[in-house]
Image 1 (spheres, rainbow, N blue to C red):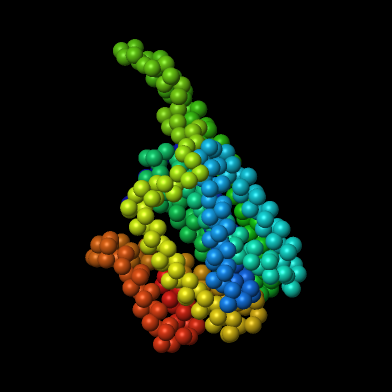
Image 2: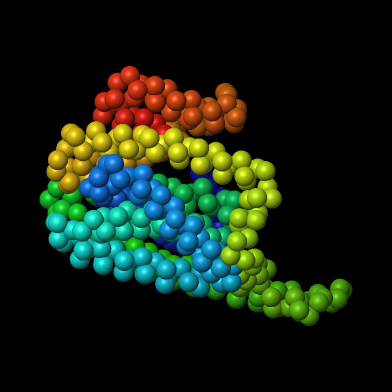
Length: 351
């Protein structure tokens, strides 16, 4: 049985897309445990202020991001954005060389990682939409996601294996390297898409030359089948916000995500407090955070493969969706009765 329906000319771009997603998620999951450690190092009592600062920064950046994406295709600026993020990691590397780094460094890194994770993943899928046509996306995107899952497993594995021997700073250089490498896959995919557009244009010209039995609009001759590759998304900086406010469905999703994030905040703060009490060494705490991420991502992969489809078949979509909030509610009850680190880790893995 074929796992995926592939045409001959799609094998290489599919593998490149998988590699690209692997590299950016590997980068994120290398630095994600360091972000968690920075929250602890900044003081558990100050975590809520880090969340507030992150929200304010993202609210300030989002309109700028929307303005750029409304006027340019992602392929036109993705390499520059990626290199900018990689340069930031190199800057943080030098700042992290000082064990007694200032508080503003830990706070800046925490907020920066949150911004990085939001923009780099959304830009990735926008880029994939640029590269692959709609019919291709339906067949290939699930397989591309597997590349990201592999990166999400490799990243924390790298951090948990190296942090005690190398410390925090060298991991930032490793992540900068993986992120910079991803620009090579961007360039390859852009060139491939351009070549496909040229082939499509030639095919249209050939069709036009033999279509003697019907009249063609001359504007169509030589035009690629999928013209989205050369067009911007359109709209304005706040078009996304307007779309959400005008759609009860999207608004409900936003409310759900907001309530979910607020509830998880309590788990994050409690977990950070217990880890701070249990481990005094920053590298040990970072290793534990990485091991938690590794466990979460491996378990997520196993559930996606063996459990999710069965649950959807037995319970339906709505009931299956309720499992997460119900499970977290039960977890909150256990934490209230027994505020122990193993229980907190279990709740973190579950959510």
